[in-house]
Length: 227
Image (cartoon, rainbow, N blue to C red; front, side, top):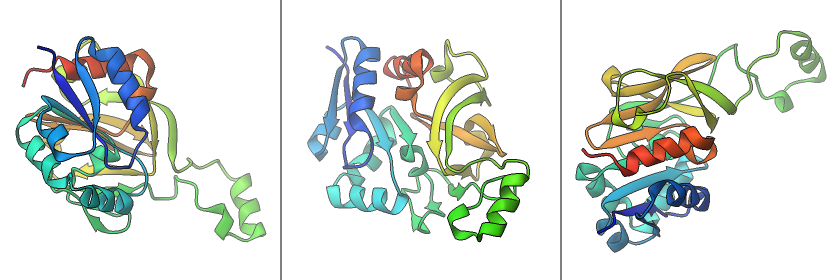
């Protein structure tokens, strides 16, 4: 009997690109979008994506009626969080100062500091000219290909070289309180955690579905992951 893989559909995220990539990677597995509790509960594996502002994601998850089903699934089933789906596993986010699911102890932080670009629309023409003549700061959001350092071995890294490139689009990142949760790190102005894992949960800030063959390999590893 083929494995059933549910992609949690609470109205946030580019779900169809995730679905296409998973179908390509999953072989005979039954991959489907899950917008009701029963569809999540019958699944063997859960993919929990997210895209957009954290307050909207948490609000939509609550309104969809799927929040408790996701928490129950996270107790025992293999679960892969993607992008904001990783951030939502933390306790709180600086984006809107909202509580998250609290599965992992930690906070979602915004890229901040002199190494990052400020909002030029809020500056005077003079200040803009100064910025343009100084060393170019890093842009926020962090968008594009960056290397991922594997902080510790994990089954989902199998066949993926250390320091491989993955595709990112984000302005916030997770800061877990427990350093052992971090299984992947990326340097972008600061060295930040881009992958977390514990027991049956693995979650990443980058987009495997946009990361070419390396991303598909991570999805295949998730499909074959025996916890």
